[in-house]
Length: 274
Image (tube, rainbow, N blue to C red; front, top):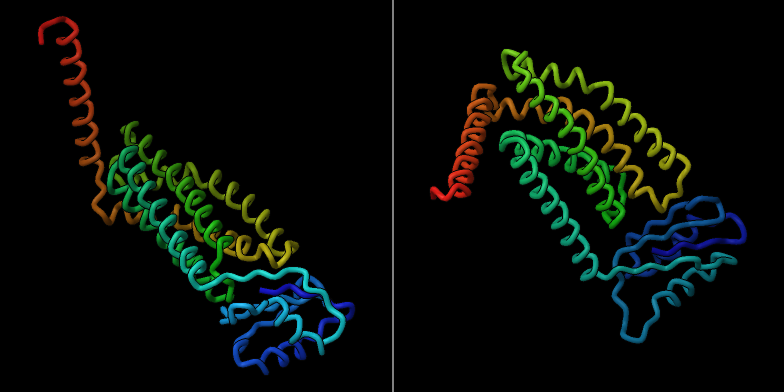
């Protein structure tokens, strides 16, 4: 990726034509960057000889286009790019596994699996939007996806926590009613929080530079996707997985009984009876 600034309006078509003449620069992308005088040139990995300077090669190709200055020159080889993708995917998988373990411990496995399914839905839709808008899959995009996972699971946990409170209060007769009450009581908070984040990220998208578009655009789309998945997808999936109030009460009773037995054994041990 090369960032070039011209003394006059950048001749985008001419620059594109100059690179297209070179066989190894086929598929180059040239676009305006921030102002009419500045452009961003993106090209696939280019094979070079051992002593060749890629920066000098690009500067030589651009000579006929006018008075210019190369302001930034970044290259990522196929090996490094592959490692970044592998580590990015691994970090996403580890994050989802950690969330599933935490939610299983805090609530139950149906809530955990429902949360992860909702998060996978979020990641797939946001990653699809990145491909749709032809944004490079780089560290900024990975950072946005990880941020969205944390943001989305936060909303989901709040709703699940409220569902548990509704069930423990024993005011609701079934799981569907408990979920409806939980969503209704947290809806205002969820929407206000999401709108706050949405408008901040929208400002980044509109007024921020193209350098951060790989972070701001996925965040913008992910805020919308994560909000509705927390409200409409995660609770519904928990029901489809067989979540039931009677089963929940049985599990809670089992936990209480286990805790009581543990406490009884502790007292017997302290009293010297065991």
